[in-house]
Length: 121
Image 1 (cartoon, rainbow, N blue to C red):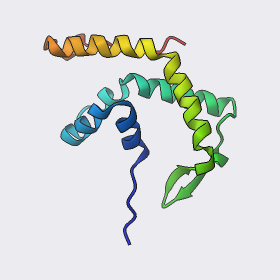
Image 2 (image 1 turned 180 degrees about the horizontal axis):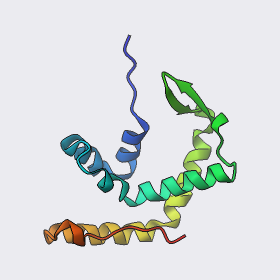
Image 3 (image 1 turned 45 degrees about the vertical axis):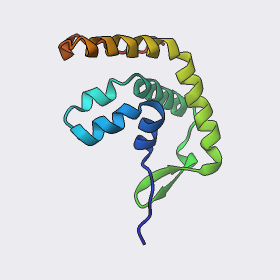
Image 4 (image 1 turned 180 degrees about the vertical axis):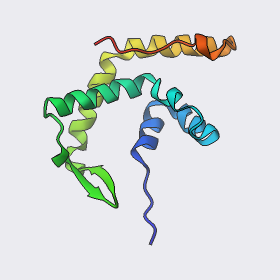
C-alpha cells in the first residue's frame, strides 16, 4: 500500500508562497538560489537555528519514519506558534521585498537588479 503524504517543503510553499509550487514544478531545480532567496525561508531557517541553539526545539521532538524526520503531532502547535511569531515580526520587511520584487518583475528588469532580502535581526 502506497502512503500519500505532502512533504513539509511543499506544505511550506503552499502556505507561504503558492507561486513557488508552480515554480518548482516548471523549473525543477534550475536555480536553487531563487528558492532560498524567498524571505520566509530565511526567517524560518534563522528561527529554527535559534530555537535549536536555545534548546527550544530538540531532536527528541521528531520521529524518524522511512528515513524522514517527522515532527511529533502533539508539538506542531508549539512549532507553528514560533514560526508565525517570527514571520509576523518581519511582516513589513517581507511585504516591501515582495512589492519591490513584483515591480521589478513587471518592469521586466534583469534578474541581477531584483531586490535581495536580508534579515536585520
